[in-house]
Image (cartoon, rainbow, N blue to C red):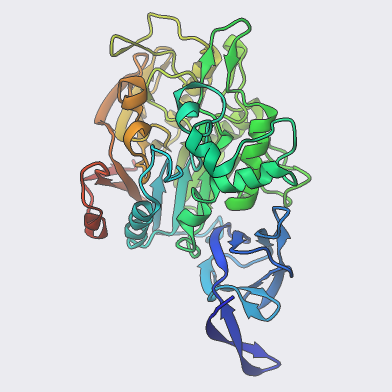
Length: 515
């Protein structure tokens, strides 16, 4: 390994030069007010275990694969609102230049400002036809990071490698190109410790580790899983018996969990979150973390409620749910009881829009290019809409902005929901925002696959202030005590010169004031 430089380290009160190796492939951290969780990968298998030093305190790495290429580091007992220096070392050799990251303010701290970078659908292997080149995506990330966000929210679809049903499987994980790149999974064997692990790495490395590299090493990141992160598109076939991709198979869940475990951080606990929620307590994960549901708590200014709407969804007609009952109750409790100035819902499935596909909150289907609720939707469960209405009713009942920010539909979109067929939100309408995508290209746009852009559900009374715009981009969200400002940045990956990304400015700014 070539030495990239040297660092001055402290030992017994003196100083010495320590070598620095350029050996890290990627770093993705998250934080809470008292904890840092870091995921890292290395260019080659390590023969000795790495350590993370947090202001000089050693945190041993936990290997998250079986080849000693991927590691997790969990530093607890930290002070809120403090900047920490991080060093990643093997023995006395730095694996990357030291860097800093700041823990969140204490939950009861008064905070004046939070800046969020928000986006969705950043995944896709550049050898397959649905995503922009990695260099272009990284350029969009670099422009977004130039605005100095405090955190990044990546809401779903970090991986596109669909395996079993529909057009997406044919052009992604089951395509000849994909099989040539990665090989094929043996669904009868575990993921880790078998050839499946190597197939997974070859499929995913270009979509996460090589994409993010070390760009976000000082930015707390919050990753939410959606359908493609389970290596499937949401598909339903009314065969005998019916065939469907969600609820996910055990193998799909194992692929999703393993991808997360190796590549991006789970969600750290917050004091207002029950310790026994679904998604937490797995014996092979650190104490307290949740794989699918969690809270972004930034002082008393902001509380973001993150929830995976695919991994735990159920069928059952009127009893069907996108999230388990315990998660729904947690959401309702936090919207009622939180003392944060802003409480925002961050689901993986957008609220407001439909493209007529299977696993949506809504029963809309596409008929002659238009959405309709007059035709039964194959596979749709009435309980999904009932849960949607209960969640939005709780948001509308808050004495603060009722806002939902989500992803999934590969578009910029904004709207205000005043009611659904079964609920009235007009006293405090729901502001719904869909964040931009830095990756989607060509056949990845919903209109290519489904013949329509995402449209407001026919069951909703909704003012679509920004119709779904199928262009690349991201959002910068500024949260202040009395308002939330959302700036939207667009880039036409089909026609624009990537050079314009470096000076990209918002095409839209929306200000929402708190009463």
